[in-house]
Length: 393
Ligand code: FDA
Image (cartoon, rainbow, N blue to C red):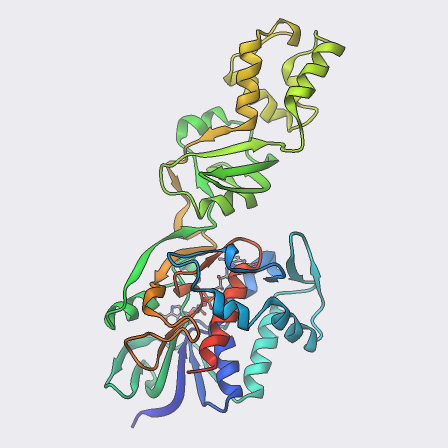
């Protein structure tokens, strides 16, 4: 005999636990299944262990999706303030780090403990270390076949996240279930991910790994102003992670270095004051020395500032304003913070996350083709979409 519940949620991550809380609050008997040994593993490691749990400025403009309007309803009905109220009710100390990003003062584990306490309070069950075999549907009920028996439920919520960090148990299972039920899936790719550089560029960057610099990273009309970090494989840091979600393999990005500095003014003033100094000495007053060295070497600038032809200085200024780089690839799902693409929003109802053609089937969180910027937006989507589905499932 199969067990019976009102709602089965597959995936005990941010979205799945929030959905269970909301469904439980409505008196629904909710069961959360997960193949992992612990719930909320990505919450635990997020934000360097302090979980950037939301962003107070989160709005539809901070999300990528084939349909940029899809996320509006859920985000409007469960806001960063709503999540913060929950955090405060549990007396979890928090702080704003920068750009509206809210972090725990102590540990991301506080957020997991809060979600588990909320689940318990509404009677939502959690079953871990449970592999899911098959999902069947007879038109009225779903049958979820697990290694420990079968559970039947009128509603099934898929909250298994994306493909990022397979070492942590990411599987892309939600996409398979979507396909099984005939729902389209927008092609997935790694997002918020470090970019690799080709061996020749890396060789030229010798000495740069570890260097960080303030930049505006651009791809087409999209730009982010934050830090970039040079690594042994290529480029990382918040500005690069942000722009990586807009970039595609082999495309160019441009970096404007030290956007607060007007290098034309700096060089003109240095020329007036002491034309005998080397160009890299002038640059190094405003940027890491190793980077200044790279630019003068690459542009063949040698000798005192006063002896440099105007054309060469112009080339340098151009380079500083828009350093073009063409990463051949990214580090991929191995290190990506999120997965772009996912279950096509055209197949889902934006109020409830329900599949339009399969009554009782829902998709929430990262599994859906809604992906946030870096900075607490992805958790806000997980909370908001989980909440939306929990109000109906
Ligand atoms: P999530 O991936 O959290 O949960 C999915 C659950 O489903 C997991 O528990 C998994 O075990 C389970 N599962 C998967 N396949 C299964 C299967 N076949 N059978 C059973 N169970 C299965 N975002 C943010 O806003 N602020 C931040 O600070 C960070 N920091 C961060 C750091 C790092 C290193 C990463 C990788 C990611 C972040 N993120 C983030 C992104 C954020 O973690 C992510 O968007 C959310 O966790 C997505 O929540 P979901 O609940 O949708 O999936």
